Image 1 (cartoon, one colour):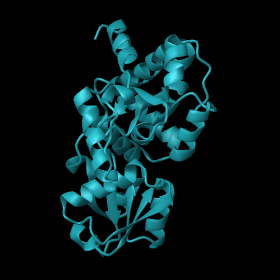
Image 2 (cartoon, one colour):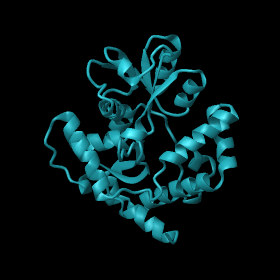
Image 3 (cartoon, one colour):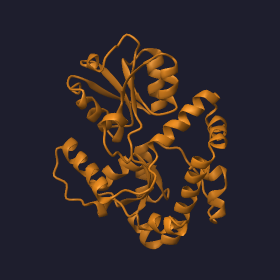
Image 4 (cartoon, one colour):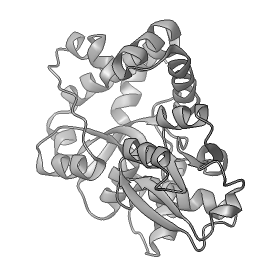
Length: 277
């Protein structure tokens, strides 16, 4: 979103946008009440939709898990996390369940305590301060922590299947009332994705300026983003069903929602046709 704003892709579509950084739960609540028009918290928004929030994803940016569990240097193996605390961003949202699913793969999901760090920035700080044995981090913090010698124990993308963590989500009402406006937003974001894929050097420079980091770190952040990027920018019904099944298993509830209740990718497909794809 920041890249789309910086390179004036929103402006080119006749949109006057403001990108606001919010905690996930705050952003979803603001979207439901109409205080904002979109959120990028795709996974958490889908969980909110399952629970009745009138939300739908209209574009998917990443469908591969982008979370790393890093530990203090004295912890050697994933199994050594048993009986310890792991700091996770948010408050029992997508990242919490992603960590549990990844740890279950290693049979290390028992006897652990997941603790909210508020956000990944605080998680990174708690790792540095030694107040957490391990934390779950996304780039750039995961990359910074690895460079400082903290143990890279779990890469969730290696063991978690489809995970639509980031996307463009809006309300069902807005989709019905303002489809052309949403289509322009989707066009702008799609142009930004194309720009990032085609112009690595310029995008790395943007990352350096936007997040005030060294080039080597920015290069690694770029690579991590490209690795998790969804090339189609939409999900199949089967991929959405995987997420629905995951939510049902993790919450121990029977879910009646269908893929069409959580997402509407008709506009991104139209945009792709506009771009001859």
